Length: 508
Image 1 (cartoon, helix red, strand yellow):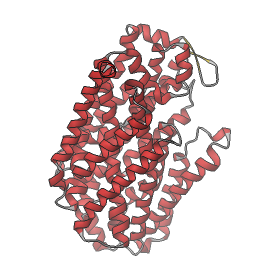
Image 2: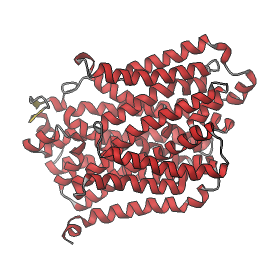
Image 3: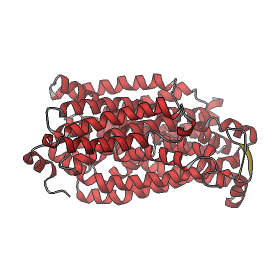
Image 4: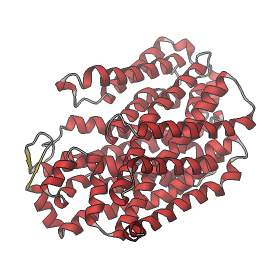
């Protein structure tokens, strides 16, 4: 009873939010189960404003609201430049990829990103590309989901005193439930609701340090002259407000590209283009999605640096080594039940929006793009098997979240690097380059995956001079070059003119 009296506002607000998400999933259960097109891409009938909010909410996950926000506690306001990089890639995604992806996927009757590769590059090698891309999704998504669940679990521990493992289980189980029930319908509509909540919470969280310290001038003066120590034990002094003093621009660029480029390559983002209902909706989303994302990123990317104004030297010495806990600390320190309740619901929304998006992607990748390719199955078995695999994968994620391999930022950045280097060349080539070939797509995927892993394991952390050069930089450049060179060397493998006419038609 004492626990409930202490946390009742947060518990009630979170329960209302979670109940709403579960209701949406249950509401669309019958509609989503009518066929593969409904369950996988919501029959391409979702309004533009829903897609716009859904794209924003799944792009700005707990990686952003907890991991990235907390990282600026270590690196200062310089980290806020990350938001500019992400917003730029959001614009590129909607302007460069969105219209053509919607156009071509509809003409090819594509339901997943791997089957887009199969249908676009149509050849005896295309089936192998489809399976390989599905395997890459299963591999990279594991890292991403662990990072998201880890962030939410830390917040529940800090604010509600819920043990880490219980918090991780709650976020994964709830999200898995409504995603399994309603498929892409529930994913997109809950994401839209979550996007509205997240937008408001981003603004609210930015205000907390200023309210706690007593205004803009007081807070900025405090963090500009702090005696808090860096990880190396040196006083930060003006480093929090001086560009590049606490972190190199090269590292900011690497992480910014690795995560920002997910918007032009990650299946959970690209699949949104499949579901939008018409050209008018596409135009709406092209304008407003970067606005929603950009404003929220301005609010949260430098948040951790501002939290120095709320922390004592002892608290700061702990948080500098545990930046994933900074946002939870801020809410606990502010000690306002109503504000904490709203923010926890918003952080839950940030995690659940991204988890739901990838849960359905891994289900479709395994069942439709690996199992169904290896052993074709009746359509009425595809959806039930997709649901079972989503549940199984979530159990695996939960177990691995108990023993995370790295912090939130590094986990999600590595996943983003794998997707960007492995998928973008084949996607861009498929959408724009008629001379792009199946061999070029396959070679670029392999090179993107291999260079990412080799650079991270054998080079980046073994040599001091390379530690700030994120694997996305060499992997993306080599992968893109591989696609171009191999495609030019294998021109004869390009699809015939009749197939290319079906693919490209009159491009929008």
